[in-house]
Amino acid sequence: MCPVCRYLECVFLFASISTQMIVCIERYIAIVVPMQARRMCSRRNALITVLAAWIFVACFASPYAVFHSVRKTTCSNTAGKSTWWQRYKLTEFLAFYFYSLSHH
Image (cartoon, rainbow, N blue to C red; front, side):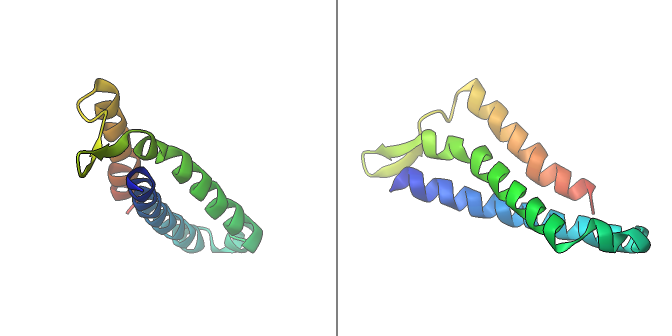
């Protein structure tokens, strides 16, 4: 259960961040270009955007499922000190923290 729980924790976290960004972008469109907002922010477009965000998040969080396992009695990351994992965490930071701050 260790990899599954860690993966789902990150999926829900990333999905929450992504959904908030989608809402912020929708509000921005509604304020800046109100005449086109109804066409751009249709129910269909909203569903497609949210579905695409969830698919992206599910794929992006997959390293948490792959690199987590139980060691002794603790759930731990098997790639925690690798260069690849450090680059992944930097990308995660840029994608979800820095990017969301730059759009507020």
